[in-house]
Structures are given as structure tokens and as C-alpha cells.
Image (cartoon, rainbow, N blue to C red):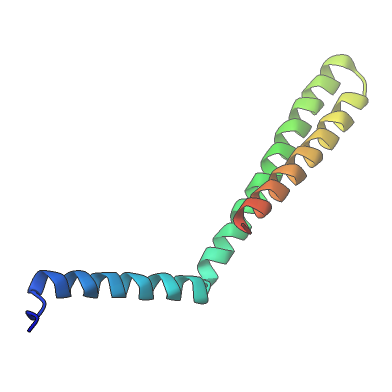
Length: 94
């Protein structure tokens, strides 16, 4: 006859079973606050390059007396922010 499992074996099996259950639950039901935090991060990821490059363009526009550096800075910030949000979403959906 076989021996009954020792306490260590049953504890290890219990831990593995609970870990699998936690992983299944985590995948099954997304947490509202995690999604809200992700949206907040995406907002920062988009706005930070826009504001920074628009400000740098504004400083360059003041120094040169022309409007085009401010517009270039704003356009570059929009493009960079959009790209960073797209890349972040693409990576999080994998």
C-alpha cells in the first residue's frame, strides 16, 4: 500500500492550488481601480510630451520672434504623445 501524503506535500499542493485559483481570478475579473490607474497613466504619458515640447517651442518662439517654433513644438508633442500612448496600449493588450 502507498503511504499517506506528508504534511509538507499536502501544504505544497494546497499552496499551488490556491496560487492557480488566485491567477485564474485575476485574469477573469479585471479590477476597476487597475483600469482607472491605467487611464490616468495614459493621460500623463500623452500630456507630458505635449506640454514639454510646446513649452520648449514657446521659448524658442520668444527667442526668435517667430511663431513656427511653437507650432513645431506643439505638433512634435502631439505626435510623440500619441505614439507613446499607442505603444503603451499595444504592450498592455499583449
